[in-house]
Length: 312
Ligand SMILES: [Zn+2]
Image (cartoon, rainbow, N blue to C red):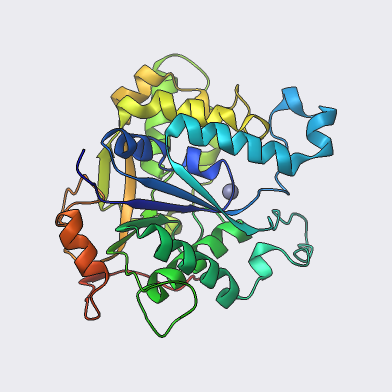
């Protein structure tokens, strides 16, 4: 098989890779592309969301190891490569006022430290396309916002020979995308499908409280319904993190394939124009050999640049 373009997907915690863009990754793996998931943290402060496992003494004793094992299973199911960036989960602060973040956590690390770690991995794996979360983190977990900040910062620095000169040879990825996740359009489709089937919808309250100011633009929509079963198996491999009877699995897969057979992305930066109706993260890029030349060229220009500052 001839070499194919490479995709790096940067996520905050183990399990995020399986709930955001997993079917897309599986599709690219099956087409022969190398896909690398980077988990910024070990997910050490995640809550046990599966009621069947809440009091399991083995899990309570060493959640960090359990999550490494779960990630290894999900990685195998998706067929991706995986790299731990090595930072510690910040946890989701709750309460009013919010408690301070724990010392030494990912969200409190200096950006130069986290950026260098990701720059090193970008220069090693040499991705042509990188995905991460939008500037609001997709949802406001401090690790998800930091994941965005680190990825944008490393994306800009990796190709600069003056930045982090001891972290490998310069490599400039050619496109950066944000995961689309659960848009209002998607939740509405799920909600209506539940009502049409004469069932109670778990999405009603979510929709009623939807904040339209946080809606995103979809630039790129991939047809990946055929990989939904793989996505769900990968997500269920994170057994402590997901309720197998929860809202994620309420709409049957055959219905999901009818009403929402795709995963959405938003182009943030690109060296090639993003054509309306784009349906491939590698669209517009040349062969691997030529793309490799672009990624190491000192005078590459971005024709799309939609990276924005977070408004809190
Ligand atoms: Zn997460």
